[in-house]
Image (tube, rainbow over all chains, first blue to last red; front, side, top):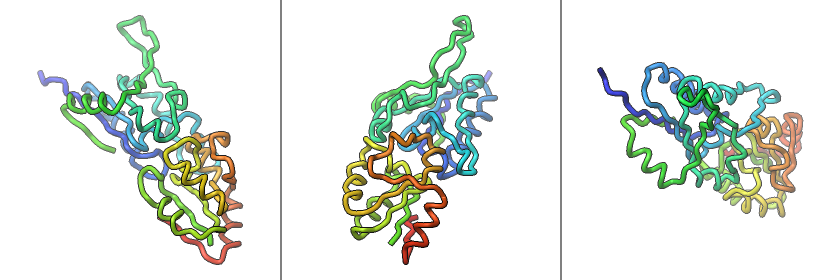
Length: 135
Length: 100
């Protein structure tokens, strides 16, 4: 049997000004069907993708931010957010959406998907991956 | 002159270049990803606050809303406008420079 590979999707763009964030999210959801070990990293302007309260009703553009809530159901439960990127942008974890997943092995307990890590920890995580895809 | 900036200040130097070249008394309108520069407490907010002293800085409210930026997170002195305000600024100014 093929070994399960570690995939990390690195998100570096703000959500609405370019198509990177939406395209990246769709690739993650499609890729999740292949039973690999999938995680996501949010660095630089990528942290804006997780900002809570996004509302596009006045601007005629697609609001795909609720789709991040589906990640947990696709077993994408490790969302690493770089602390330095948040701080540079005047943000804290409380400004981000409350994304959770249900742990099958722990009586379906709801657990947070977002983990704030510092640059050094993220650097170490990148080193452990088999495949890294940037969006 | 009206200057519009549509890029995130954390990703390109569009805003910095614009603010460096805009004359005092200019109208500066932040749109699309440019509205991230309107947030208080960031690495670029001091630069924006300094500009407010000599020029008028605006941000497009629908673009702030789309990005989840609440009006009370916006730097004091930045004026929020809608699409009608965008049109008004474009008409009031002789020239418009779009910092793409």
